[in-house]
Amino acid sequence: MNMDNVARMQAGRSISRPAENPTLRVLSLGAGVQSTTLALMSARGDLPTVDFAVFADTKAEPRKVYEHLAWLETQVPFPIIRASRDGLSLGDAALAIASGAVARGGAPMIPWFTDDPTGMLPRQCSKEYKTRVVQRVIRGKLGLAAGERAPKGITVEQWIGISWDEMQRMKTSELAFIHNRWPLMESGMDRRSCYAWLDDRQYPRPPKSSCIYCPFRDNAAWADMKENEPEDFAGAIAIDRGIRPGFPGMEGAAYVHKSRTPLETADFSSKSDGANLFDEECEGICGI
Ligand code: SF4
Image (tube, rainbow, N blue to C red):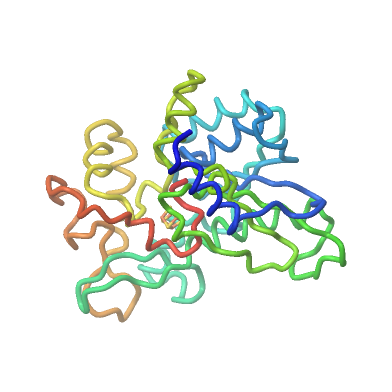
């Protein structure tokens, strides 16, 4: 271990700590690189064993993510609970808002790119389709009804797979009885070290997790999807076409791609500007 790692671990441990005697230890599993690393570290005893993991399913992950999840379920000793928000899937909700079948405010919004004015729509999808889905599962395990306060003494340690390179995405829980913990931060691990950890143990590299139509995907990822995952790409195009009005009465048009052009003709050749587009995802739960 070099000094960089040691310094990172010290800094990481000053901002992420275990909960004291947690009632439950839960992994929020996006099934991407970082949360897969945490799941396997827990399974192998490199970290404590979690009671269960929750995969909040928007029903729109890439095909490869579902395949990877099915594999991961065979590798860990704890249950992986797949759960989704009740009602419309995220993609159907976006189409319903765009067509006016559901009023704006009647379903969570995805932050589509807009051209008049140039900007993005509000971000509500990750909170409502991921964070709160995991919370609902935790509440169910504790026998708590929606909105019910947890009795004193109940603490849930929730692991989130934020790595060192994405520390700006760390966010405390909105619920007092859920204590967010970022074990990769405490280990000084970044995304590259997660890959190295997986490679050393001959695990397959996980695909990047995020909805197929997620506007936070960079050009390299779009180009890869177009070339290698035509069904996922066709699904993203269908959503992109359907959300063009944004919502009834919106000025201008809404797009999935940052260029604010239709996805089917968008130019993916320009390199990413180096920014992590997921920095814009407010919950720190997607893409990991
Ligand atoms: S992956 Fe993207 S579209 Fe899906 S919930 Fe997260 S931010 Fe929203």
